[in-house]
Image 1 (cartoon, rainbow, N blue to C red):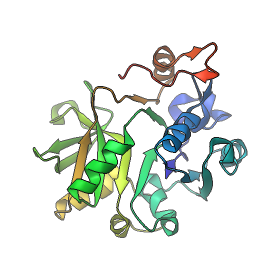
Image 2 (image 1 turned 60 degrees about the horizontal axis):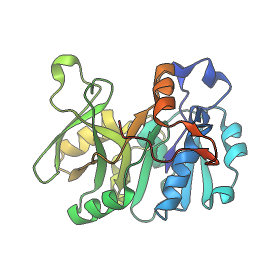
Image 3 (image 1 turned 180 degrees about the horizontal axis):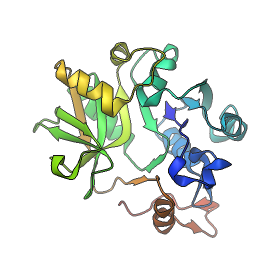
Image 4 (image 1 turned 30 degrees about the vertical axis):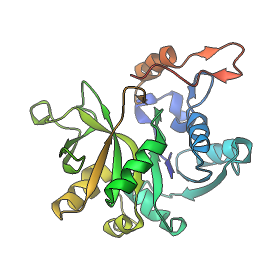
Length: 246
């Protein structure tokens, strides 16, 4: 599931007319890069949640056949949050599935993430990225075996206990959906993960390696930074697919 319903308020006025998931990166809309990465790992059945400028997103991606995938849409009349959005689309998930925050760009190795998740056997596994300044992210404390013992969303400076942050890429087992109340705004980082950990649920963190990148796109300066990491290169038919991880 690709989470793509957000308003992108910090990117205004650009996102007044362009959904955040379609802002240009390397000459193409952000979410196109993610669709192609998913297809490259054999993930071809995709649900995209939509709200802000929903018809623009639908009009661009259609049924997904242009990218070699099948796309379906989960419309939200009101925003439901990261976890609420997944709960809203629960009928489409009969087995373990990926959740990807569509406003980030990443080169996470989904094969490694999947293998780690299957080996650990937890209810969910979160891809983790080492960020020098984690104040605007969800941070985790881990055991040596990768089991998550604590999760804190957007810590204050005196609350930072880790530089491993959620990369916004997850593997989720269907039983986790039972922990999400329906029809409400529910966030994974603020609501679901802390509640699951308090009940002793097994959540794991997959530490991304140096060859796996993550670029968050929250503000115009983030787009400017990404333009240097992921430039358009003539003769390649689009954007460079292998930027240096940052």
